[in-house]
Length: 218
Image 1 (cartoon, rainbow, N blue to C red):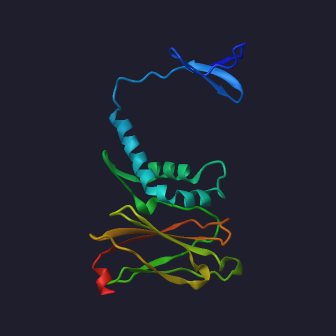
Image 2 (cartoon, helix red, strand yellow):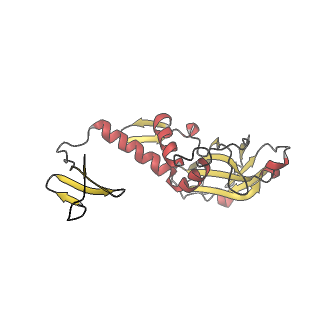
Image 3 (tube, rainbow, N blue to C red):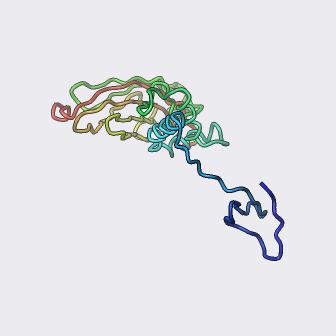
């Protein structure tokens, strides 16, 4: 890469032959244009791209929430970038082209608030999920907002609750809309301060199967 000093014609930009001219921070640079490879991607490259795609599909619907929680932990990196790297390293299973998320190894949100110490209690015969958690005696945490993050593996849809329950309540009920053919749910719990400036780490609570017929049994 070379640095050009602008002449009487002013700065140069664009592609000329096999060179690319561009301006960055007021200075003009030139570099060789990339050459397209005639070879197709290797199996390793295909595998890595497939893993990356699976990780992004998994977290993209929660990107705003993830980035909000991580920015108070590491302001130099976005939460989605950090989480994708962690998933690729520790929470992808399977072989190309079929890769899957190892859900118990994923911590979706990060923060410094006390852990929820939560538990999930499926309500058999209904589409309701019952939750409970430890109530802290310290008053500064009692108004923390409950966050439930539920993913349906069948559809890829996420169900979230934000601000409907407080840490002081100690328990709550969440009703899930089951797909026609039922679905396996993956569930996480966390807490967030009322001003959204502090989070707890999310906790994986497990998985539960729900069926469409449950609506008629409730």
